[in-house]
Length: 303
Image 1 (cartoon, rainbow, N blue to C red):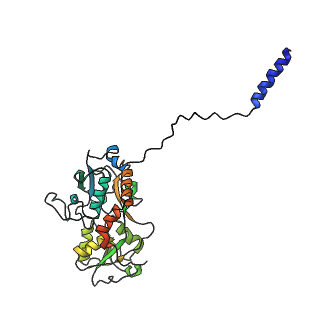
Image 2: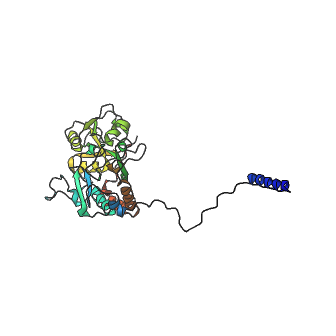
Image 3: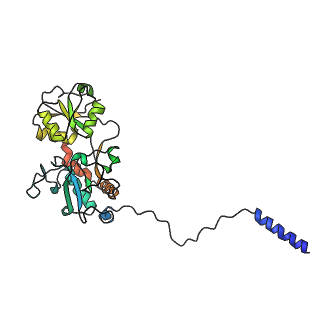
């Protein structure tokens, strides 16, 4: 009998060892569910992400503040700003700043402006602004040093010359091969000359737009390359005999202007959301229509 019971015990152990293992039972449903990280709320970004000055958003841009990006003229209150006072929040970029700031929870009285030289906009290192805009085109190289927002304006480059010049009626890149062309330093306009137009003459480079415009007025170059809205300003205001030869087709990815921020800024995601909302609700297209509608058409210079 003892041997019989012992045999049964052995068989039970073997059977248990050979039986398939069951999965652990699922945990009891207590009504709790896993939560995704909360989406960024643009209205609370100023509180959550912080700005360099409490209660204020600090915006960098160029001085002079050129039309059509800034409008409204100068004021005695902010006399240091040339051409236009950015605090008026007029012009395409002025109105864009006002709309973005509102999305972040800042009213017009809570916006401070600081002048920023163009090349310092995307230089590495700490910044004395929360974000900067002054027709800064996104590029992978620039993005190594700073953060960029998504696009607030898709842009084409254009060629400005003067009436009676040899390139005034040019319609193809081939007709520009022997031309003397120039553009401001560090701009995608200069890159476009070198990489896409590829003239036989070495392109001239200038510290800023004023230098390029003066060179064209003095007859030192046949034409200068700038973004299309700036081309309309140059020919309407700065060079009375200026003409827009045409705009250039996009080569590769669409060029666009973006807000630039300090690298890994906590505000970058907030600005992206603010811009997306302004596009979705029609605000940004309306701003573009108001300030840049007259700059939409120019003949295309074919490749």
